[in-house]
Amino acid sequence: MKTYSVELRHAVSKRKINALPNNRLSPLKKRLPTDADAIAWAQGELLDFARRRSGPFYQYVEAAVIELLAFGVTVDGKDYRRVGRWVCNAEGLTWRESPAAVASVDA
Image 1: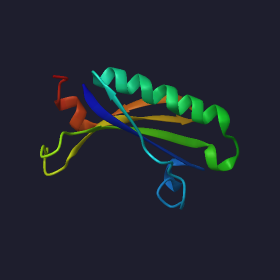
Image 2: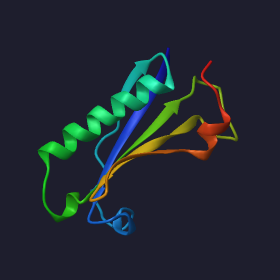
Image 3: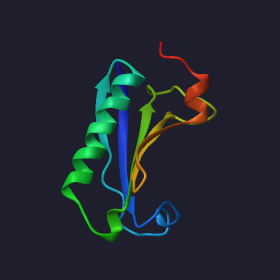
Image 4: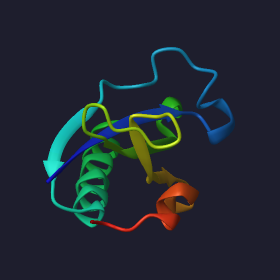
């Protein structure tokens, strides 16, 4: 089992996602067996969040999926591994895999 975190953020657009204060929800954490399970869990959380919110500050919503590594384990000096992120905007729902995740394989 691995520990994953999902971080939800929202904004008017992708360009504004880092410019807005208070647009990040507290991270959600869950233990799951594989990246695929974490990706499916994040998609459900993103869709639930997007269904409950509306207005201009929710035109772009993303859910980053991060694997939290065991204590004392680091990869490239970090204690986490970015898996990717779900993006929900006017164009629909899209999975964007992290370049680092492409190189790694589930154990």
